[in-house]
Structures are given as C-alpha cells and as structure tokens.
Amino acid sequence: MDAFYASAEQAAKPSLRGKAVVVGGLGPRGVVATASYEARKFGVHSAMPMGQARRLAPNAAYLVPRFGLYREISDQVMTLLRELSPLVEPLSLDEAFVDLEAGGVADDRASALAVGERLRADIKAVTGLPGSVGLAASKMLAKIASEEAKPDGLRLIEPGTERDLLAPMSVRILPGVGPATGDHLRRGGITTVGEIAGAGEDELVRLLGKSHGSALYAMALARDERPVVAERESKSVSVEDTYDVDIHDRVRVRGEVARLAERCVERLRAAGHSGRTIVLKVRRFDFSTLTRSETLRGPTDDPGVVREAAARLLESVDTTGGVRLLGVGVTGLADYTQEDLFAQAQAQAQAEAVEALEARREAEEERAEEERAGKERAGEAAEEPVGETVTEPVVPAERRWAAGHDVRHAEYGHGWVQGSGLGRVTVRFETPESSAPGRVRTFRTDDPALEPAEPLPLVASPEELEPR
Image 1: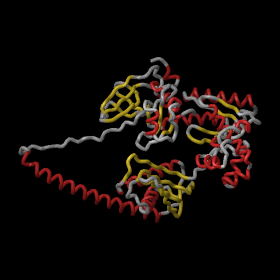
Image 2: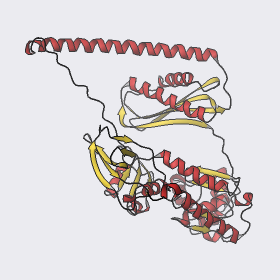
Image 3: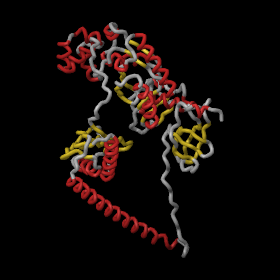
Image 4: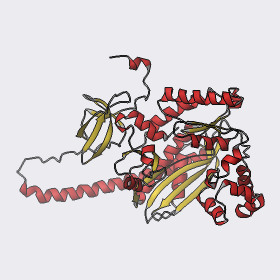
C-alpha cells in the first residue's frame, strides 16, 4: 500500500486530498508513522521526530493514527491476497508476500502481469486506496520491484535481468543492511550491490562475519531461496507506552506497569496463548534502556500473576531520574495454561496487600485534605454570612479530542477533529463521499451535542450511494 496511513486519511477527508499529511504521535516525543507523498517533497519521512517534521513542513496536516480503520482496510487487502494463493506472508498492516505459483494463478510473464493489474484494480475498488505490486522470482526482488513501482504502479523484474538491475543500487537496498552495516561496508570501499558481488564472499565474511557476510553475498548475486511462509509463529506478546513527560512519581510508575500488564494479558488471551517468561522494559530519562525478566514454573495467562511478576521486576530498577517509556511483555509462548494454584494464590495475596496499602495511603491523604479544608473553613467562617452554605462548583475533566479522529454532532453530522485546546475543539464536517471540503465549526470541548464516532468506510456500499 502506498503511504498507507496518510492515504487512508486523505481518502477519508476530502479537504486533505492532494495536500501534505503527516500521521504519527503529536506529543513532544512523537515520531512520524507515515507521510503522504506531498509531505515527502519537504523531506518528511517515517521514523522522523515529529518536531523536525513540523519544521520542514509547517503547513502540513498533522493527525493521530486511527489504527482501527487501518486494520479494517488491511483485512480487506489480505482477503484479496488470499484469494490468489494459500501462501500469503503478511509483513505488516500494509505489506505482504504472495506465492502466485502456489495459487496456480501465474506461470509466465503475461499471466503474472495480468494478476498484478487485476489485484491493483481490486484493491482500489474495495478500499478506495492505491497499492503497488512488485513481481519477481524471489521475495527480495519482489520487495525491490514493489518499491520501484510506487506510487500506484506495477513492476516486473524479468528472470535473468536481476544482477544487472541490482548492480548500480545502493547496498542499503538489500535486506539486513541498515545504517551500521552500510557504514561498515562503506569504510571497506563498498557502496553498491555490484561492488559486493565483485568483492567476493571471502571479503564479505571478513568484514561482516560468516553468517551475515555469506547471506549478503548471495543476495548481491540475486540468490534468495526464502520461501513464502503463510503464518509466522508468535514468539512474544508485548505492549509499551512512551510518555510525553518523564514520570518521576514511583507510585505512578507502579500503576503504569500494572496497567500495561493487564493490556499485555488481554493481547495474550486474544491470541490464544500463555507464556512462561515475563519481561519488563524501562527507558529512563537519559535514554538508557533496561530489561528485566522472570521465568515462571509454567505458562500462564493469569493477569494477577503477570502483574505481580512485572511489579517484582520493577523493584530492581532505579527510576529516580524519571521514566520516558515502560513496557511489559510475555515470551516463551504456549497454547495451554499450567494451573499453578500456589503461584496464583500468592499473587492474589500480594495484590490484596498492595491494594490494602494503597487504600490506607488514600485514607491518610483524605484525612489530611479534610484537616486542611477544615482549617481553611475556620479561617473563612468570620467572613461568611451565618447560615449560608458555600458550595464549590464541580469542574468536570476536560474531554480530549485527538486531531484527525472521528466525531458526530447532533446537528451537523459526521466530521473529524482539526484541533483542540483552551477548552475548544475545531471540527470539519465532511465524509469520504463529500464532493467538496466540508465546513469548519468550533465548539466547547464539553459540548453535549458532540460525541466521538466510529470511522466511516472509505468506499460506500451500493445502498449508501443511492440518492437520498
């Protein structure tokens, strides 16, 4: 898929079509997830700090991801791919390998091109979004072909032409060559794929080691025997959060770890797994990252066991300087749960003890607050009329409206959040079917007529397209 998240947002919001759109975390430490092709002209790219992106493209639309919508579109695309072959290997929400030979749908150049064109048309018809198709005799070359086909194109690499095609390309085009390996090769005088092939396997092994060097040399010769694997076995389940402001309060850190443990178990159960090893990840204020793990006697999917194990691991980590990221994961996955009643009972007892301590702490804080309030009332009593009751107004917490997310107004209908702040939220009212950019209106963040909404389909059903 081409600039997937940004393309989906442009399709959903007519006012953003043809304009620079950047999707990612909008906080001080946010990074770019996807940039539209219009934004890329300014130098914005994935994984770039959001602050740098704003400096390069100050007039772009900056939106928070809507992963629910992206997953729905991804499922639609993967369904189309599985109609072509039983061997589909998803790499991410927007990318997959397909073995056309296994599906019996392509056995020569003409049939392969026909399948590629039909797939692009089907993706456009079902999702409303563009996708690019790369056709080749191996996974590595198909990936390269798809990148060369972007945006919204089709590229076939003819068998027998692979080495000539690869020779002038940068070494970074090959799988497994990141910035570090690329710099190592550059210091050895190697900057292109052709120079890797010319250096010989022995030189590559000397520079990079036996395994990496031999694999890289084979790929430079266009040799890639990796099969398309229909399903990859999960090795771990994890969740993590990055915080806009460093967390210094130890009590809050414990609370965040407990919350992450609960979310991790939800994902674990949804995948039908249990696990033996609990992993805690802590990135501190100075960007140092610490990982701690504990292996249980048997696999579990009990939230209490995972939560308490993560809490024990946290006790071995110094967080006094502040924490910018926390994560909890489970590895050593299994398809069954070993009932460890002793461990679960112990975890339950520990959880109850923690809850009791928290309850006592909260009670002490409440008593202290009451004492302070009593003193204040005593000091103000002389100024208040006798018999008059002074009631402090209850101020509700301000609702948060994420930029780009869907809303519905009782009077104006469906729209999306352009921005919010200072008690106001600005909404543009338009849908994917709108023929022109919608109107913009501003409301109070607590306006009862304004509510969050689910994303609308990018492609309307035939019933929805009928005249109203």
